[in-house]
Each structure stands twice: as structure tokens, then as C-alpha cells.
Length: 109
Image 1 (cartoon, one colour):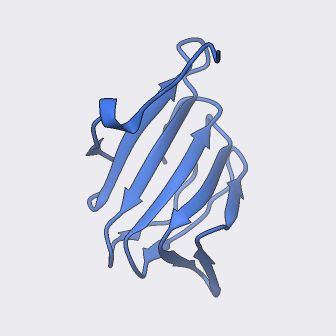
Image 2: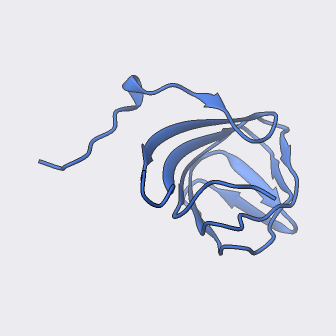
């Protein structure tokens, strides 16, 4: 048995830090503030360029397609943004769902 199991049927989508973004928190580390979330971008949504000053971000695209600069990320892509490194804007070409981990508090600047 695993010490922690999260079932999406027991969780709810909640508003994310930007319009058109929703988060489903699967786990939160109460000591570090880190989170594991499902993240959903609505089709056509643009997330402005930003940094996460307190956390490294890892995102695995489960479905959909988003573009950043001249790169298109599709399902099966792993994306890493180191703590403090500016990234984006992200443009959702379709609805995008990713499994995303932040190893510290999810702050956005």
C-alpha cells in the first residue's frame, strides 16, 4: 500500500492564478508548500510570461497542445521551468491538461 493516494473523483477543479486556468490539487506538502496538481488551460487561453520565484516547475502534458515561442508542446511532453526562470507566454491551442509539480510554494510573479 502507498502512504498517500489521491483520486480525482474525490477532488474538485478550482480557479487557477489566471483566467482560463483551473487547478485540481492532488497533493500539498505542508512543510515545503510544494504541490502536485492537474492543470487545465481552456482552448485559446494565454498565460503571460512569468516566474515562480519559490519553486521549480515540472509539467507533463497529458492532453492538448500549447505553444511557447516557436515550440509546440503536445501530449507526452515533459516541460521544466527552474525556480526563478522567466517562461511563457503559454498559448493553449486546444484545451490542455497537464500533471504539474511545484517543489515549493506556487507563487507567480
